[in-house]
Length: 507
Ligand SMILES: Cc1cc2nc3c(=O)[nH]c(=O)nc-3n(C[C@H](O)[C@H](O)[C@H](O)COP(=O)(O)OP(=O)(O)OC[C@H]3O[C@@H](n4cnc5c(N)ncnc54)[C@H](O)[C@@H]3O)c2cc1C
Image 1 (cartoon, helix red, strand yellow):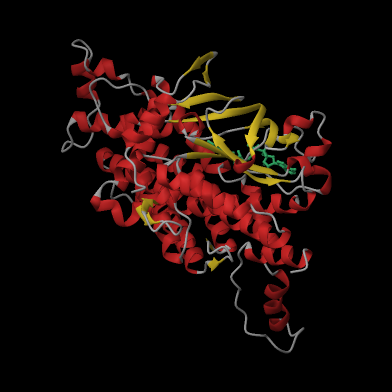
Image 2 (tube, protein in one colour):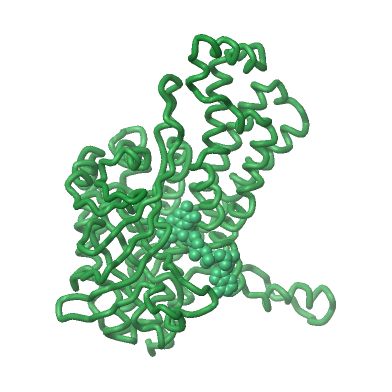
C-alpha cells in the first residue's frame, strides 16, 4: 500500500546527506531546530493512518489503483478537489497554521497537465516520464517542496536581461544523459525536511529566455544542492505543554551549484528545445493556480484559528456579548466562509484537462485567495484588539512557576472569575504564539505573499475576466444597446490558455 507512516518518512530523512545550513553550520535533518516543522508533516502521515480521517486523507491512485496519501494524488474529479480543500482546512486546524505539504501536491498536479499537453503539441515524451516519477512518489508516500520562486534580481527585468544570468535558475549545459542547472530558488517552505524538490519556472518566458524554461525533480539531498534554512519556532515550554508549542516551519534559500539532473527527472527543457519555452508560463501559472486553490482551504482555517482565539479571549475578558466584539468575530468568520465557498465553487466548476486532471475555475479561485490575502492583517488586528496588550507582554513561562513570582502572576492574570488562572495563562500563551512569535511573523507574510503577491491575483483575474461582456449590462441599461444577451460568466480555467497554445501549435 502507498500510505506510509511518519516513522517511514522520518527514517528516510535520517538517511539523507547533510546539506542543510542553519546559522553558519551544516547540519543533518535530525537537527532539533527542524523538529517543529517535521511535527507538522507528521500530521499528514498520522491522519492518513487514522480511520476517522481516511475518507479525506486517503485517495485511490489513478495509475496503480492503490490507496495512497491524498498529498500524492492527482485530482481525478471535482470531489477530489473538494476533499483536498477540506483536508487542508482540517489539518491546518490541528497544527495551528500552514500544513506545508500541499505544494508538492500542487506541483505534481500542474506537471500532470502540462507534460501531457507538451507531448500532444510537440511530440515529446514527458508525460510517461512524469507518470513513472509519480508512481515512485506515490509508492513511497514522498513529501516535496515546490521550488518556483527565483531570486529574480532587478524585478522589472526579464531573466535574460539581468546583470547576472543566474538570478533565475537556468540550464547551463545540456548533456546526453541530463542537464546541469545553476541558480537559486527562494522562500522554499518544507525544503529542509522534504524528500524531493520539484523545480518549476516562476514566470512566462520569452524566446530569449529558453535556458530558463526548465522543470525537474531531484532528491533534496542531491549533489550540488545546498539548503540554507531559516526556521521559525515557538518558545520552548517546560510545564504548560500544548499542541501549538510543538509546531513550526522552515523556509530556505535553495542553491543549485551546477547540479546535474538526470534525463528521467527532467520535465521541461527550453534550452534543448525552444519549442518548449512557451509552456514555462503555462506551468508557472498552473502551479500558482492549484496553490491558490489550496489556499482556499488553508486560509479559512487560519482565519478560524484566529477567530477561535478571539472568541475565547473575549469570553475570558468578559466582553463576549459586547456588540463590537460580535461584529469583529462575525467579520473574520464571514471571510473564512467566503474564501472556503469560493474554493468550493471553483471546484464545482472545475473542468477536466485532456490528461484527466481536474482544474478549478480561475476567477473564483483567485477571488477567494485575493480576499484571504487582503484580510489577513485585519484579522490579526482584530485578535490583537480583543486580546489587549498582554499577548505582547506576557511574562515568560518560568516566572509563572517560580515560587516567588508565580503566585502573583496567577493572581493578577485572572479575568472572568469562572476561568482558572492556568486556563487564562494558556489562552494568552496561545495568542502570544499566534500574534507575536517569530512564527507568527512568518505566517503573516505568508498569508500575503504565498501563492504569489496580491497583485498577481489581480493580474490573473483581470486578464481572464470578460470585461466587454460585463459592460454589455451597462450598455443595455443606458440604452446604448437594444438587447441584453443572457449574461452568465463562463467557467474560466487555465484550459483556455491551453486552447491558445493548441492554436499556436496548429492542433
Ligand atoms: C512564508 C513564505 C513561504 C513561501 N514558500 C514558497 C515555496 O515553498 N516555494 C516557492 O516557490 N515560493 C514560496 N514563497 C514565495 C512566494 O510565492 C513569493 O514571496 C511571492 O511570489 C512574491 O515574490 P517575491 O517574494 O520575490 O516578491 P516580489 O516579487 O519582489 O514582490 C514585491 C513587490 O514587487 C511587485 N513586483 C514584483 N515584480 C514586479 C514587476 N515586474 N512589475 C511590477 N511590480 C512588481 C510585487 O507585486 C510586490 O508588490 C513563499 C513566500 C513566503 C512569504
